[in-house]
Image (cartoon, rainbow over all chains, first blue to last red; front, side, top):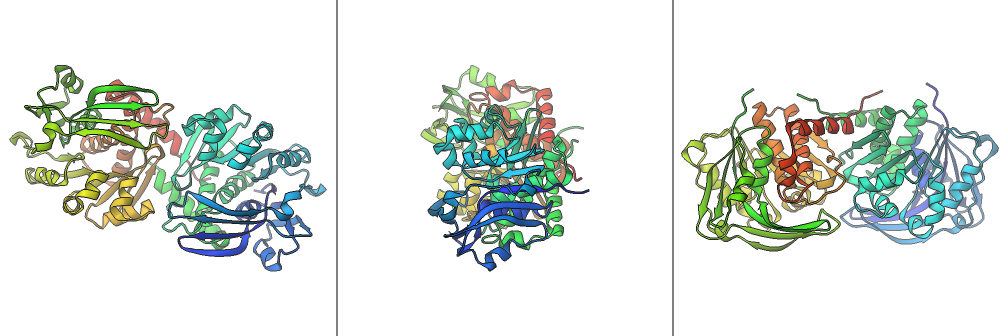
Length: 305
Length: 305
């Protein structure tokens, strides 16, 4: 099976994170980083993003993999995007301490000609206008998957709706789904979002797992049981990496594939949260990933009498 | 298959509930009511509780079923236990407006001699001292399942721990599990509770489903997707009814049975929340119950490639 290539456009950042279990200063973060390091276990990834001239070789080293193509990682004069945040014991709630967009502020994604025929596209969480600009540079992709966040839902709603209309699958968390649909019941919210254009909506619920809804499928998976969530940063993008990565690997998105894609996403998120920064993903192996997939089957399967 | 009888000891109450979708005044409620109306689909139930002399025939009628034995429903001079509460749009959060124990205040459960050899016992949410007094009246039950609530965890911790030590399965919700174990991670909390005596712990998470943990099993089920949660009151006891009811019906509690018991519990909770009071359970049929079980399989099953 020859996996299709995935194009991801998003952020590469330096994160400073404090959790009840420790803290980290200016380590590799950003949606495109987590996504790529997760998806590469399934399919080759081409990353399009921008960093500043302070992005060190060591940072770049963390992204190095035979299956991650960095030819689209632009280096601009200035500082790399920096984000800092803090989690309390309720690791579902994050408090952003600061966001300095830096070179990311004037980022205009330019898709290298060699990547314009990418079959699989992941539009990580960036301005929905930029997400559309990416789509306009791609030649008939097979599957477009998009992420977003509350910031765009609140501040760029109209632009976001125009983007969503054009994607196949929208991935978002449950608070975002509720906010986007203006509906408290998250399943009803997800169904309302289907009416906005995407054929499939995936809702991530952190420690409560995730579900996927489309016109003919509803599938729910529990989270992989992790004893110590060290740092939830990047869990969503790592989920997306497993999800899109698997679909690119198998080359279709029939309902049974979509089910499994949710589970592979769940597995990848579980690795991401076990260490600070991308440390959890870097420890994952094909074998440990497969083990967690099997474990999730054990956890969630039951027979009729 | 001849189902074993279940003894349930708990409350029968008159509830007044307000939700964003309407309100109800002094309709049948109480843990033993919800449990019995749920469990009776699986096995015969004997209910031990107390009501006041204001408990009308109409209220009693709501509990009438060939599979619910009310010989242990004591009538005392005075008023029936009354509870009133309110839910906002976040139906996971309930605000208790008033609790009037009335005849329930001096309730001393007396197990009729004919019920002392019950194989299956459900200790619904009452004072842990009373729960133990029930156990002392039962002759070697096959399975004892116990529920509790934050009120006892905070106010009667030592007594509760003595009760928990003696039960086979403890069912509680995730906030209660966290509080009982003093641990934020709910899976770690559940594991800590296993160390307090029960062989199995079931944690209910409302719209996020439920999980079960024992020394050799971890199983998680999503909630049944309900479009409109009318009134969450009684969901937990209805879950327990399906859970214990199924185990009594099949007569064993091997791991595969425990998995299915969680799913039957999930199904019964989904009916309970669709109407006020016991209206949702009363609309359930064997056929609709089986349909939801199958639907939950569809929702949660996946294969390996």
